[in-house]
Length: 226
Image 1 (cartoon, rainbow, N blue to C red):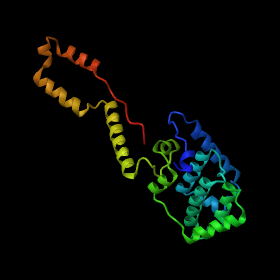
Image 2: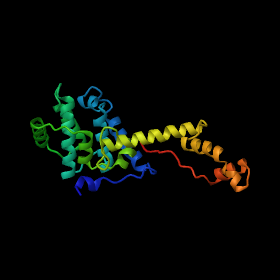
Image 3: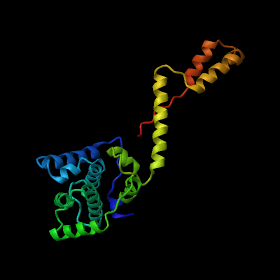
Image 4: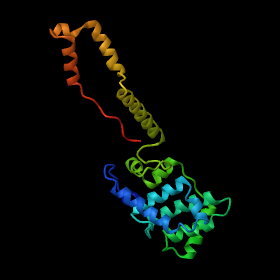
């Protein structure tokens, strides 16, 4: 288990306290720097991937300052690579310095310039799944934080797409049921019973048979995961 993974606590989706605290930390950070609307970093934060990275960092470390250790440096490298690509057309150095001052104030100016030079020499890009693996982000935590541009180490893109389709199909079936539509299996069973008339063999009326069947039926709820 990596140091990054060890710090990433699994969120119970039924307990939103940790998520709410994380969002409050990010809101406070953004509010403090709200007067810097024309800075490169302010514009960068409009990027969904980058804003979700900051949200994940804040949740992971329960703070808007990275720890001065290998896990903090790994996250710093990920952030600086993203900042470089987002600002490469107009010069990313200013945004990187500003971000490092906020999230890694323990870095010396020399260290910041060294990191900038290292990233300029090899500015890595990550796919959603690669970044999910790098951050060891569990799918449940991803769902709880509402993250959409970073993958999950325990459910890849194909698996997430399959899950979305399955949940969408189940939700649509539930909406049709609430509008009074009869499920196909139930429809076929009803028409088959109209031909075979099983209530006659039981010596009861059709209405009694249907009532007993309805009382014995066990329903299932809709899928609530995204």
